[in-house]
Image 1 (cartoon, rainbow, N blue to C red):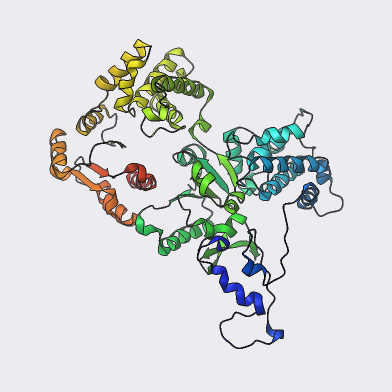
Image 2 (image 1 turned 60 degrees about the vertical axis):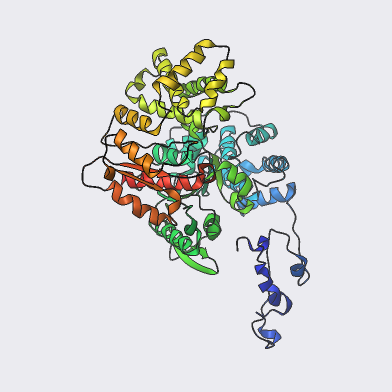
Length: 567
């Protein structure tokens, strides 16, 4: 039913007998008063009058500055005299004021909440306790960026805190590397993420909250796998939620929960994507609300009305990756507040040289596309803000043999030219027609020559033939994502295609993505293709009608294809 307070099914009606006479209401038998149970309901939603009129309602509003300061003191320590808390005491009021100012700026949706403030206080206390020194400005910046991040440039949280809190910069010589890391933590985007991924045994900041990576086009998944978690002995388990029509049923939720349960017990990190129907079962896990039994941690997993107890390994981490627009518009506030949030896109991992190349490519793209009030997204199919950064990252990989020359002008010019070529491959034909209005004739002629002479936009057959000839590793094959305004391929089109490529009919396999009801059906269809032992070349074409309406389905299929291809 989702959130019970907001469900159109009105499941809270089942509580009426409990609220009226303390009984379940299952039968007409009157229960003795001594055998009835007290009922206390706690909700962060305004309940309907039918509930409130059946009990004594106590309303607790948003805490003010004094209450926040009192909470901060209690979070740090309940001891009467605590020297580490004393180091932070003078900042409590200023931290509370800064938090309240951020709350005013984020109206109407509550992206940051009390959990973020409480986590900030705990992190600052851990830092001070680890170093046994007064708080430094760089420690404050690190803690604020980790607990009030994820919104990009919409709210300058670190600016709010810095305007209210002034800490003198003190440089100290520290020999112990752990103490140095706690006194001068890394505040770069990658540094923040690496620190948040550390386990309790390897960190100076206690146990971190679980993570929410806001991203574009699921770029954070590749970054995590290749740049952040690639050197771990126990690679993360990626659970990409299926968008096939029959995979949203209860049985699939049970399978996913079971996979997460196994990872929790073995200490394997879990990355969740496109699983919005699952998150409400994980609220106790996200709260890190553990029960300690004989030295082990346990937590409840929810399956509708059922609760199962699961052991949690000390090294377990849960990471949610979601498109930033979906988080802003669809994610419930209680879910967002439970997580440490980071905005992760491809530009996050770019070096200074790559960022310089990115700036030049973005300038060129605007010059190419912004004609007659058109935007960049009108010229390049599937263009997103992170597209140029992804191209720069890809180009750097293609030119990896000459990375030692990255700072030379020759390498930069070559990389920029290759980046333009890759971006032009996604250009629509009408964008080339609009170049007639461009004043720079050199740019106009170069783009048309590349697009119409060097690239292959006329037919799928020409494109595939060119890729087969250009492929540096033909035995490994290649993956293509083709967008077209033409109709889907018919059987006659397939016959023409395999003849033009010099293939036999049994070497070309084509089917429609919408044919499959479940992800398992799809995997069972593609597995034999990737595991063929005949040694013959094979062309697999998977078509999807109305791609702009099936973005999640295509992303799910792409993930499964890559997984099967690698395995």
